Length: 415
Ligand code: SAJ
Image 1 (cartoon, rainbow, N blue to C red):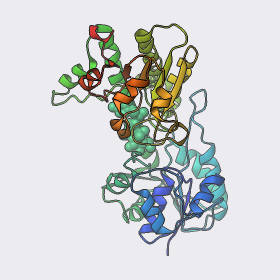
Image 2: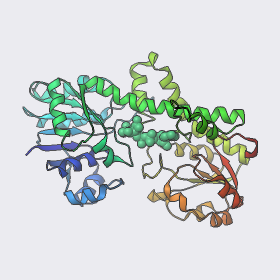
Image 3: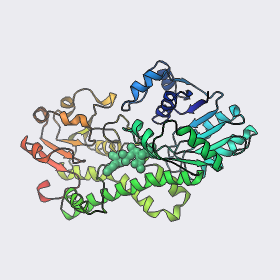
Image 4: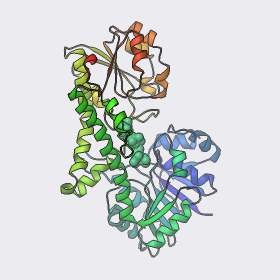
């Protein structure tokens, strides 16, 4: 039976491993984090993801601290950026270094982590060849970028199209056969560098489009009109689809991956760089809006609703809400309420919002649909809500006696 060893047990490594396990492969996971390995071996899923818990419990998946002999090695480790926006490939390098002593003729190594162009051929390949084996001849090497969206990971693992970027064509063909065991989308084959760049361009496309939506919100506030109305009308055009403005981009992909391209081709990636910077400025723009509402006098009390990087997740990595909190804290008292994040779910929303001058809806969690507005209003010092996601119904909020402010709405009635 084919044995698979997955290195990196996060939002990609765990679902991918369980998916292969459910198709009858012998799969073992590897992670250096003690809490992750212990949790998995106690049959407790260490991440939150829709429908994953049941599949996890039923498949008896086990984890180790370092790789073991296997026929296929899948690398799913994180690729963060350093403070100077350069890529940090430490985890990819150490996973490859940990794998090569176990590599034997006929094995296959698949890199799923999002990486800068040429990482598979120029960084991973030479490390693996320290085994004395030749890539493309003795073993297969492939970059198959993960493309699933948190919140719909299981669905997208099965249904999304997939790219197999082989060091040789034969490598891609073999990887395609493996993934066909659970992928129902189409599988396309190419070389590893094209695969790496396609994945980066997907996330960059989204980042640029989110930056555009955010710029629409800024232009409209400046023009003293409502960006949401403008977007709704512009999107009536058959070839226009403007995304939604918000407090900026977060997560470990969209605000980071485009920097890999900027680093590699700094002179040719002007739009990409500008969109990264524009999205990074959104927390500051939100704070300026808050100061327009409250004035900049010291000592306002503000409650932020939601701290994750997007709706209905517990993932707080790179969340732009941290930046909003940081800037506001310089002058104000700030509380955060998030029912999806253990550290921020208690005390209750009303306790967090008690005596507040403003509540800011930062993340559009479904759970916020059941907020009792009467109770919320009764504990606040001044009944005011700033909605950064057009989450609330304006008329409902106003009917409960609140002042309602909307990010991107610069109309006169806002102030
Ligand atoms: N956002 C907006 N406005 C929008 C849409 C999103 O402000 O209209 C913000 C979100 O609030 C969030 C950020 O953008 O902070 C990113 O969220 P997302 O839903 O766009 O994407 P991720 O980071 O959860 O997942 C992306 C996906 N890439 C694409 O859609 C091209 C996913 O398919 C990738 O697999 C994933 O990155 C990854 O791991 O690379």
